[in-house]
Length: 361
Image 1 (cartoon, rainbow, N blue to C red):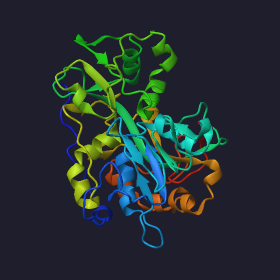
Image 2 (cartoon, helix red, strand yellow; image 1 turned 135 degrees about the horizontal axis):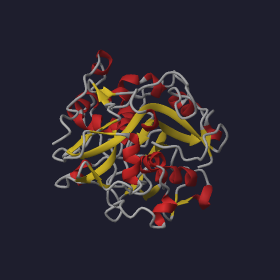
Image 3 (tube, rainbow, N blue to C red; image 1 turned 180 degrees about the vertical axis):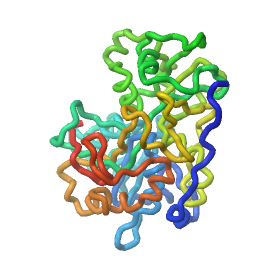
Image 4 (cartoon, rainbow, N blue to C red; image 1 turned 90 degrees about the horizontal axis):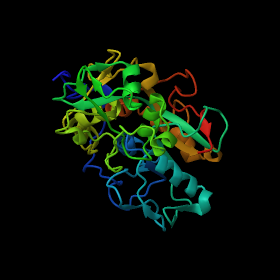
């Protein structure tokens, strides 16, 4: 075994320990069923647990919970996001969440997976930017709330190296390298529609069009069944290598603490997975996300809203600006494995609550 150790837990600061414990665990929908709240969100698997946590602690001036976040899983099930109508297939992943948001905003005839969803989705969870070149114009605004990174994961018993270079990873995903130091490697791709898939492929220099054209035959999707951040697919496969969100890995390892502090149930799906280093930079240091990880593999995570609704009082109070309800809940964001940035660096590395980044998708 070349990779030793794994994230076993996260040290909680005093602010995190002060979070109130709720009476019962949160599930894939707000608890109790029928608690529709003011803002309904769908999409990213990466950030679903964090938004569940924020849904428990973010409250308005009347002490009402504001955020109702609907998980990406279980797959092929329906959700109901508003009291009237709004019963539709659960969006799985950032891309599907943004598609549902656009339909809710009246695009595509207001239909998502054949269902009329106009007015049913208020925000989309997204772990990737859906535009091309980052810009400040567009129908949808990507409001940053946390910092994540993506690294590779392998089976704990694998003989694959504990550290690969960024270039080595690119060569593996371009099918130019099929073994490392004599150890075979099989690169995996998580499900289509995933923000992590989109982000990872963009960094590997691979496009969906090239994959569809058969240019990268080594990439394995297992018939599009690999759910992002589910390390159990690596069990008994010492050649498998997959992208994995550092924030999700930390949260899964910290599931017991999260349940105690927030009442939110986080499924530990790590299985035999351990995270690798990139250019010898560790994705996790002292139990928390290393914001100084390989720059190309650090990303913001977003709550996406229609640009025309940025001035909506509830959306503005909840998401917009460093003093918004969400950004004020820094201990919760960090408890769920994500980093926190308070200042603007560039459009893809914003401060919490920044509204500059936009796109039409």
